[in-house]
Image (cartoon, rainbow, N blue to C red; front, side, top):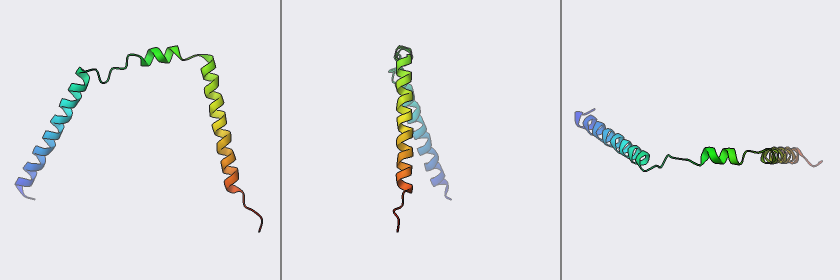
Length: 78
């Protein structure tokens, strides 16, 4: 492998790494990673009714999946 190719690969990878670092710093400074409502909404919408609704939806999903599996395994008589 030629030295010029290695130098080119190192310079391109350094440039891409620097671009990624600049983008990360820009994102942190502009607040792209701040989610101030995440924990508040988690506490606000975490009650017993929503928990029961989630359980009910999970049960429906499981029954639909079982029904699909039963339909797939059905073979008409020959």
